[in-house]
Image 1 (cartoon, rainbow, N blue to C red):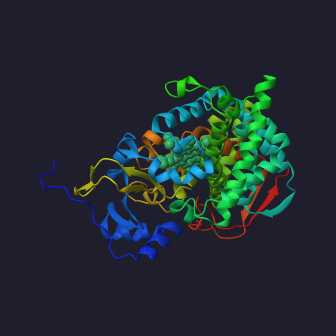
Image 2: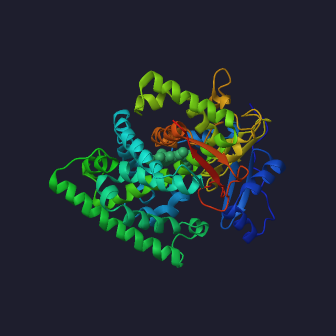
Image 3: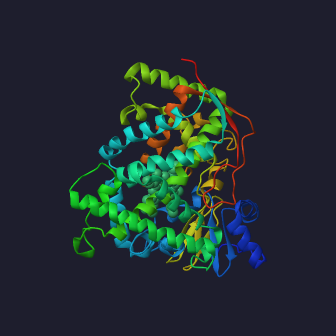
Length: 455
Ligand code: HEM
């Protein structure tokens, strides 16, 4: 234990207010890199009217991920989502209500429910790629963004939206997306055109979903999708045990789409980019497909997808190299102490915004050997580098780890199984950099040639 009195983390003074703000919102990678070089694993940056304390690496992260919401709270830092998700859900409600709403979502992702989504992932992927020609030039990011919207529409929003309302709903979701710009994080209600459009789209979506929900409730027809789960769900210990309102269901559907759509499509893209750039890994994953087909036949099921360990490791490695969420954040409601790997102790005061960075942590050589190299085998026995606590945090960790992780893996695996079985890929550009200007960080443009395999 440490006999010296603990002190606050070093503060990086002197960043110009606007410059600091722009760096923070427009691409904080440099800020993290310089701050880590200057101060080490824990330092504080004044950003606008707030103090942001960065905790970098596994030694200083456990409290961040493990602490209860009365200590490390999300709503103060994620409440900029309220106008997008809408009233009465997630960050617009008390913690105990939010916990129940997430419980309802978790119930839509049990093994049996996930099993029922796999045929839809498969069908959407097969139909989508059937439209490709013999050969052509594409950008993974554009293709997977469209395909994941289709799979999400089918499994989360339901048959009605996918079959009858898809174009309209996709346009409205796009409008919501465009309404989330870096300025929105600090000023979510700023009177700017993209925010006005966001509000109009949110309202129109609520009207569409209300009609779908009412039609289902009135007809008694049931479907296997997340929407049905929300229609059937009831609060247990709050709100008098009632069912969700139409407005709440709409808000929760938007929230899970926002949590899962770009993150999944970006990870699908990086998986393809890295496998195409490292032919040995592509071939190994294609070989695995052949073995699976030999053992289980061609049908893609929950069980066969779960067998695909080589593909799984490629996805995990793509996510390690480029996690789409650059920062995860909390608001410190009680002071707490962290101890760095060199034994320094700091007290993080109440009122700080506290941030951990999956991207930066994943590049620490003390966590991952040769971290800049694409090496999916780092996750295979005996290395299993993912097992170091709080080293791999692409899906977060601890109390608020990603609820959609299994859903995401199944969806990405279904897409890549279809592709590995039918296509070869060649990158026409170098492996792209990440685009740190966007809210969810994906690859910059990158042209890829696909060629259908001769059977
Ligand atoms: C939470 C990443 C896919 C739903 C998180 C967190 C991360 C993350 C880092 C933690 C955020 C924090 O600690 O503040 C990802 C990545 C994905 C993915 C990289 C894809 C590769 C999905 C999907 C869904 C989803 C497909 C839903 C269908 C959620 C939800 C939470 C969450 C509801 C909040 C959990 C909580 O606060 O308790 N995700 N996610 N995610 N994710 Fe995902």
